[in-house]
Length: 227
Image 1 (cartoon, rainbow, N blue to C red):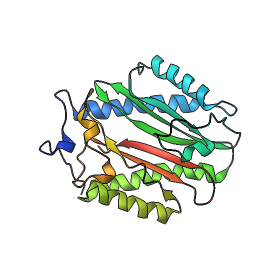
Image 2: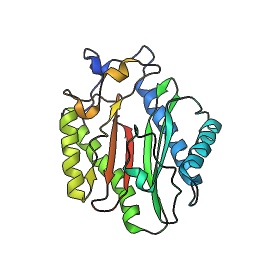
Image 3: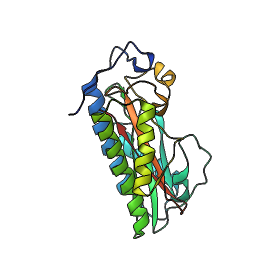
Image 4: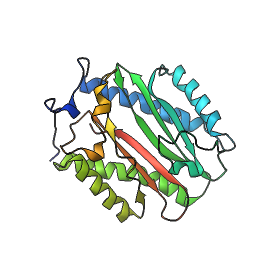
């Protein structure tokens, strides 16, 4: 049976601001996904990451998502192995057979939306499988969270095991984080989901999944709200 866990605001990692609303948080996420898919549809082989970011910012602005709490991130090819903090990545061009991911953090309905996904172009079957596997792994781990009363640390331990069972390697430098109403300074103090000693509450935590191919230099990414 699926468990519903309201925020335990007695714990600092679960604090929310006065404007926080679980309904608004979910709606902000749903709207943000439109932005990711429109950017992905506009990305073409031959385009450089910098060009894709500039185009993505225009698309988001046209969608009313010009305000962001974290910058738009687009990664191509080998850069899909890099984490968000690696800002000085080479400005790669997308090849005919390639993989990429998009990560956006718009402020919508007064809340910190945060969504991201990987995509493949061309006909490399392993790249398409990698992009799909990140989504599948996210759903498996989210289902475990919904069904079992696990800590954030234990949840990522399970994610490692699930990734290995699927034939991929999980990057534990990427292990989730808090979101809430905006601005929300205490979000930073909450730490990573993968370090959380308590149980993640619904509507507050972003589950991040970043995997890599076991032998080839590329990976994939997927993130969404544990709602």
